[in-house]
Length: 463
Ligand code: URA
Image (cartoon, rainbow, N blue to C red; front, side):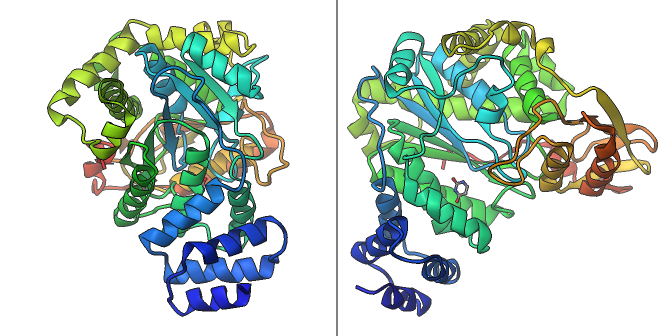
């Protein structure tokens, strides 16, 4: 086999078999196929796409390129949730502890942030002492003992994806549905959970800018999961504006703690659009995982893989259980147990004011009366990056204390001279650029063309 022939076949619209895909993936991972040939192949895939069979084969080759976590030592049906990346996405800190509190073991492998999106592992660094480098033994024991563990993804989990992703990042080949689907699913499958729930973001802050693309990505990923015998469901959720009010590591963790501390969820979200969006996405994600996990406990994983339909008439009942687990404080307690077990200072969970927020608070004011009608959510993420809260390169150090607080959501009215957001900076010299960038991310119009955004952030359920 020659890389040249495989590149040419794909370039000309041919369908590759598993052996050809394995030749390319293994050869590149081993350093035998050079970057220029892999780049050409990726660009051919970008333009010509991949069939379902090719996408599954690519996922398989990347999954098998490194370690596969064996979670069989964890009792019960293990659940994992993955988001395709967005701005202000702190759902892992809410979904994981609530699921664990509801009796579903959560064995979560997470990554660091890059570019305009934040990473779960960076947010955990806000808690003094929190150890994300768990041995396999501790990871398994913690889930068995307290129901949840969260650890940094090991370097040898799908190493082929790691190397290919780095090349995609610099060759403008990231936003290809088969490449994204196989990249995400190879890591999920290597991470060993029994049940996978996917939050596919759609909009200006997401990889997939439009609904059709997000839906195809969601379907491609759920098909891959199911083909591998893992009950897999997805939601498509709105990322045309940040999720919740807070963007920035420490501030996002604080907001997650705020959600887990709510005593009356319905009244809290009634007049608070940002909070309502965040709570709704979390509740829907947990509901899917809980329904699938309980079905699998009753019927066995194999049976659920063959029939993973959700009992839609029971959704309201499950959602009520999730809300109850927030209101009775069991989710918050579970998060504190995880923090304590992993060496962190759990007082930060019960006294979130200890989470450090940068001292320079600057309002970002509306420049005219009207409604917020458009947002470039990626630019809100970039504002956090400018302030020092994100990574421009893998090696960048980040300041967890900086961030952005969004007061108003799309479709809400604003008044000239009044703030619709605040910037929290650690360094005066970054303020002007950050304010400019954040103002530039929003549009204000006299006519409310974003009124439809005041409905649900869940664009498509139960895929
Ligand atoms: N996240 C991933 O892990 N891979 C992609 O290709 C895109 C988002």
